[in-house]
Image (cartoon, rainbow, N blue to C red; front, side):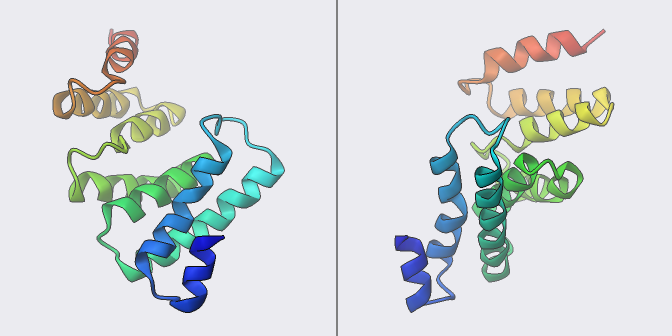
Length: 144
């Protein structure tokens, strides 16, 4: 509500716009794999906010990341790819883990070679990331 009020005062406020777009993740929580109809509506709302944030700052790693993540959880996987690729370009060490999202998308598309490359890239850049042990196990399971 505070971000919406801030946007009423200044519709061009990037911080309010990008935080409105990201606030949906805090409301829905970590179980984004099976969203309810209401949560899906919140994700659509977040997508509108993130899209507006990108209009204000197209080279924002955060806005690109949140847009990609929102599209991912809306199951619009192909649309999410360019945003994750942009994050990798803008912030190679992004803690929003675009490589992990991309690897999942590529696996869904049956492209295990590209998925492996994304996982390897993630581990090369962030070998001490909290998710690195899980990524290493996943990588072992994908390699012949």
